[in-house]
Picture (cartoon, rainbow, N blue to C red):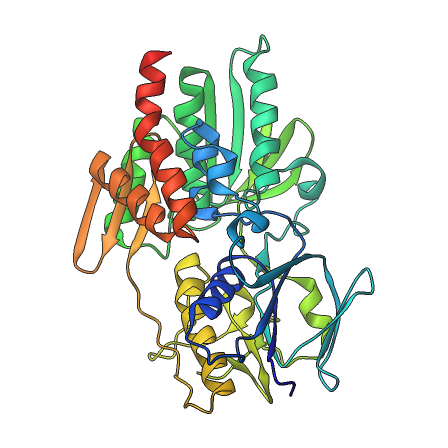
Length: 395
């Protein structure tokens, strides 16, 4: 190992970016602060829990998706835009698709997941997922065209009634109001099957108030440019639509299967309780692509909350491994769940507290403001929130 440790982090989502920032803050001895390189395909970090606010214009793109260059300004972290082609575990190097090679002493894998889109004909060509800034802009562009048209009703089908599907449905309903005709399609017999009952009931109430049609125990046969095929109890109906949103499931980044790392049956990287990859102690894995269990033997949820907690442990354990200190086993703490239910409405439950309505909406926004990656960005966004009503009033 070189005198100055080299740490390479693949993936700039919650797991990767927050690990890098935490590593930069730790107390390194003089001359031993590592060279930290963060690699991501995109130029901007995306704070995905607030992506829904772009639908209604409650927030702007710069608030939710600041550039990595801006977030890392004033730190010793180097950002490299690129996609990973190969990991040489023996030589301890990463090769990008443009053939750039980056050596490492410690490697962090935070490559995340994607929305699967190959299970139904027409999904890739005709549906919009809702995971990236580009997805949000694509949806907004389609909505603007339809809103400016003579179309009396804007018909939207949302496939998947988990948190993402419900949040998208409520935000779209509040944006389109009486022009919207929205269907929420769920293969199971209830929406939000893994959510607390309080959250589910609040969501059902919000959907009903907005006139959103919920199709339970319904699957999709195909999607075309202007229709969706729905299967209910063996019967298929073709429903005309202007937009189809696809919010079903998570799929591990396909690149992971090419790196020769130990994977479980779901294709996730297997890791120890210290978040080190099995049989590869110099490589750490976290976030959606890492396979870990909690103390009860259950899979840790693939959420931003999980990745944020893991990033603290990964940073600490890398620091410990480089300074001859004991590593800490990761322990997941469920801090509760929050969900936006339209404009000025949300639900929050956890830590013995549960409530919904405008107060939950405000609490959710404040929690996420605190969770934005840097103090500078928190202050910029917070100031914008405070002055926005005044600007609106004056205009």
